[in-house]
Amino acid sequence: DTAVSQTPKYLVTQMGNDKSIKCEQNLGHDTMYWYKQDSKKFLKIMFSYNNKELIINETVPNRFSPKSPDKAHLNLHINSLELGDSAVYFCASSQGTSDRWGFRNEQFFGPGTRLTVL
Amino acid sequence: AQKITQTQPGMFVQEKEAVTLDCTYDTSDQSYGLFWYKQPSSGEMIFLIYQGSYDEQNATEGRYSLNFQKARKSANLVISASQLGDSAMYFCAMREGYDNNNDMRFGAGTRLTVKP
Image (cartoon, rainbow over all chains, first blue to last red; front, side, top):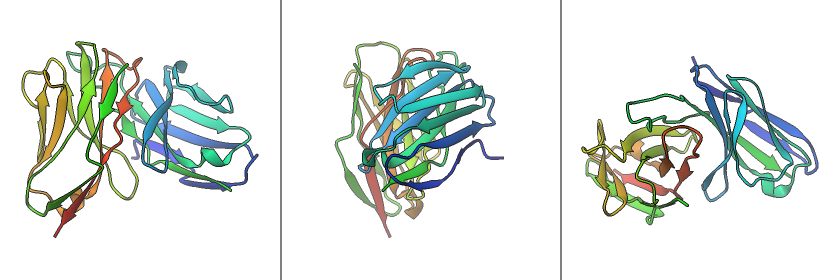
């Protein structure tokens, strides 16, 4: 009954390769996110999708392309991998509606994918 | 632009004692939400507690409470009766606005170590 799942958990690949990370949530949420956590543990938003529509697209290289086939899935495809792409990538999801103030919307995170580019 | 500051890169606390993890934020909005997440060494991100900018009372969730001082723009996390399993990274985060169209910004984190 995993809420937010990501595959693979670990990914080791050579520079220049293309790879994908998959994310699925079974919480019925309508918003999904991708975050990058660097070696210093700094967590930064990359993308946000709401009902399959891109909402947030932070300044990330266009080698990174999110794809949302449906509301429950948000995959991250990375082209021409570079050494600096090595990090832990987290998928998260949240509900669009929440408490009376509309703020809560806590995000539920997947277990993370540790990407190592050699 | 919003900004989250966690000034304590690392903290130590004795088991069974209370500890406060600092978080200050910068926003010009009146409407925002503040969140704390825990990241143990296993790597997952676990939601702990939430405080809305209009909430008049400090949020509490079990051993976690949030010391919300709006005028000072601080949202410190207090963990009471620390346990060894509390050793982890703790992240403060904020989102402005009413919906998910505004992204959540995270602080740099504080690594808490609970000593037996």
